[in-house]
Image 1 (cartoon, one colour):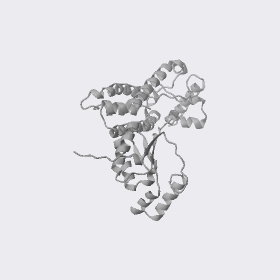
Image 2 (cartoon, rainbow, N blue to C red; image 1 turned 90 degrees about the vertical axis):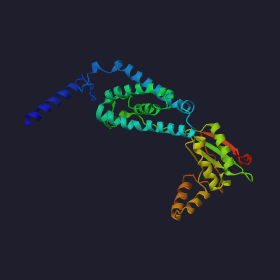
Image 3 (cartoon, one colour; image 1 turned 45 degrees about the horizontal axis):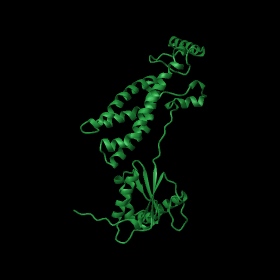
Image 4 (cartoon, rainbow, N blue to C red; image 1 turned 135 degrees about the vertical axis):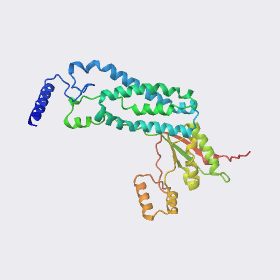
Length: 320
């Protein structure tokens, strides 16, 4: 037992001397055979074509799909606005989660070399199959698996950009997790829909919904939030719910109204306790999210704006 420990100590000492001599990278890197990497045989400009080429192809593929996915789903695959919006948000959400899986595979199992090599190959295969989905029967038969694989490997194939040898101990520990690759999330655009005045006699919420849906479809709200404000005090709670629940028809991720006294009345009608309602109101007022019509209103900032005078809504008649 002692001889084994002595032999192990000698091997470790020899390895430390080799690292300190400057022959090896000294950052724990190994080649595809699992051996320590010699400085003279790796890195520098030899690795640049692989890194630049991989990064350029990956970025071009991802942002090309992200930019044109809505048009592709609606025009080529003939999906509705609601279905297209759901698929786009699912696609984007999957992409933002996959760095965690890639970090586990890279740091705990495969290493950088095999992770990049394996998923770059898979990326290329499915990148060539996804555009063919419009020719399949039924359309989109291979779109889902093709683009799912693309987002799955999106973050896996990115090479490391940091030199661990130049870091202090605290930064070196952080480097072990996801190789310091950032994880980002794109916030959706919020469309402000300003309602002015009040509905004329005889005009119903259905008439208002048809007008609102037409305006929002023309404006383009796929993958966005729509907040209705200003004139909502003239609308009943049922009218607000009717408009907000039509978000799949105009293609938005969500349509909603701010909280005011009518919302608190609804909470009372649905059996919420007074303590719960008071807590909700206090929280919303503290964060300036409660609409009090007796106080001056602060103009909110949105990604884009729409405006509708409620008295201009026309009565709609439908029939066979």
